[in-house]
Image 1 (cartoon, rainbow, N blue to C red):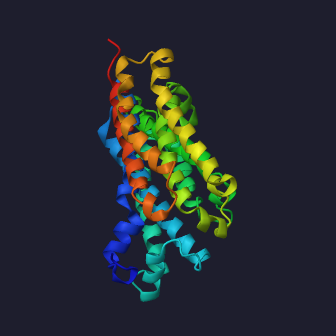
Image 2 (cartoon, helix red, strand yellow; image 1 turned 180 degrees about the vertical axis):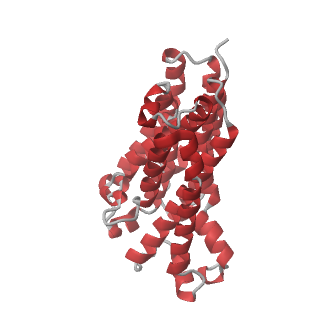
Image 3 (cartoon, rainbow, N blue to C red; image 1 turned 45 degrees about the vertical axis):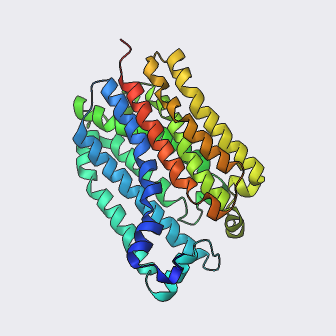
Length: 317
């Protein structure tokens, strides 16, 4: 097994910091749902959607970098990521390098703002600010919200509602020319777009819960009041199970009460994978045992979202 001192700068940045098998699927999942809703309503606009996703992805990555920067800066004696601590000692990784990476991500995201403002106006700006704030203040600022146990509901809302609505809105605004309508434009959107993404929000939140199970001892030392720290393994496992059940109960509910076609049941095809991941989460609690469960849960959320997007996009008749 490769030791921390043997990791190259590329491995540090890609495998441990960017962590694409974890971060990219979770960022893309709600966007897929927004695309499905746009196809349903004949407003699909690929350029605004892609630029909006690029901005949100950059904010997401900047938030991940900031999380690691704050962990290493505020808690240098907590061996949560020994490879990163070793990289700091050897100079393979520096705080200046991390700060520059955070700055580049947020600056590049900001460069998309003129275009998104020209398409979506004030509403697009507000959605972007909310996304940037949720990414940065997870672990940054004087009072990181993860420290107060607020990460679970914020993640659920951001990935289940805000990202879906934002993806839909920028396409809808491009088609209807809503840049000058201010925040009132959001009130004109179909109300069901705030509901369709909720199961994806639940599954993305579950990805974070797996990390919280693995890191609960470190989080307790850091003073982070995650669900695992406050309620222990049994508590966070119940939360994980509740969110999973919630995610798989919603497609039938959408069929019954939102008038979706039977294609909305497609996400249920991911149940076997969800069951296997739950088997690990319900019995394992060590980092080495759960290390691969986070990316698997990420891909579960992505696959579920893709199937949900198809189910939403296919018309009733």
